[in-house]
Structures are given as C-alpha cells and as structure tokens.
Length: 193
Image (cartoon, rainbow, N blue to C red; front, side, top):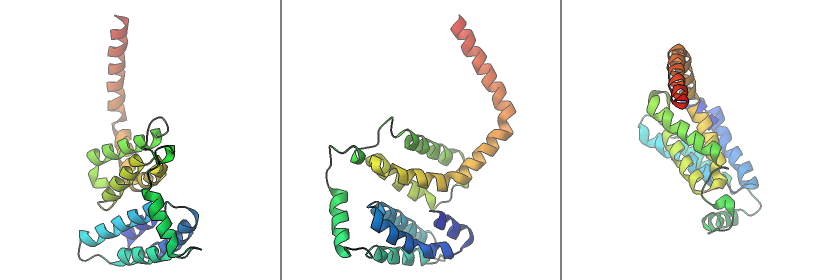
C-alpha cells in the first residue's frame, strides 16, 4: 500500500516494480496473498477506470504479480489449494468467523475512524483509496483472520485525513475545551441533583 501511495503522489515507479517480489514472498509464506492480490487488483482496475490518461502500469504490475505467485514449490497446484481453502466452510474455526468484539475492537475502531474521516474531510482522502478501504473492511468483517489487512490499509490511506483532523482539533482546542467544561458541569450538576 505504501508503494501505491508513493506511485500516486510522485509517479515514482520504483516501489511499484517491487510489488511482484513482495507477492513471491507472500505466496510462499501465507495464503492471505489472495486478499492482497485482490486488493491490488481493485486498485489497478480503479486506476484504469479513473482517467484515460493514467499509466496502465498498475494493471501490468498486477498481472506480473499474479504470475509471480506461481514461483512456489507447487506452481499452479498452489492456486488450486488456495481457492478451495479460501472458499471452504469452517464454522468451528474462530479465525474464519465474522469479526466480533472484543477481539475486533481495533478494526471496528478503525472502521469508525474511516467513516468519520470520509464524512468530515473527504478532500483529504485519495479517491483511489476508497474502494480499497471498502473492500478491506468487507473482508475483515466477514473473516476475523483478515482484519490485519484492513488495519494496515486504513493506517496507510487514512494518515493524511487523520493528520488534517488532528490539526483541526488543535486549532479548535480552546473552543472545544470550553464546550467540554460546560458539558461536564451540566452532567455533574445533573448527577448531584
């Protein structure tokens, strides 16, 4: 995701070129490569649709990354396994269950922050990150095991919006602290009565 941010911000292609290498390693250590490839594919598709003047490089890198996942001891059979394993019904394995509290508190908090940031400062959130955040939130809510993917996606793509929100809060802090003091006084008086 950092490679996507760097590419979008400066059109620097270097980090984008490293993505197939990341997928080679990822395919050889964890089946979550399917979700990662899906998210990168969503970004590539959105990048192609967004404007006609954009580079097709993300789509090309996605295709190369898909092929790069075949560099593993099982070659194509690995994908047969991944597809059957990722669609298998596992009602007794909690990792594959829907995300729930209390273990999902960080992810649910980040989803709330993402929604707040989208409503409060949409101009600070890159348009290409919105479908990634939605897709990552969806898979995280469906399968607790994939919550970390949303968490990382949110941290990377919401950083500018959060920075903007914190700067706005600092600017408004005197006004907010007076309102908070008044509200606290009302609550304390209400409890005392």
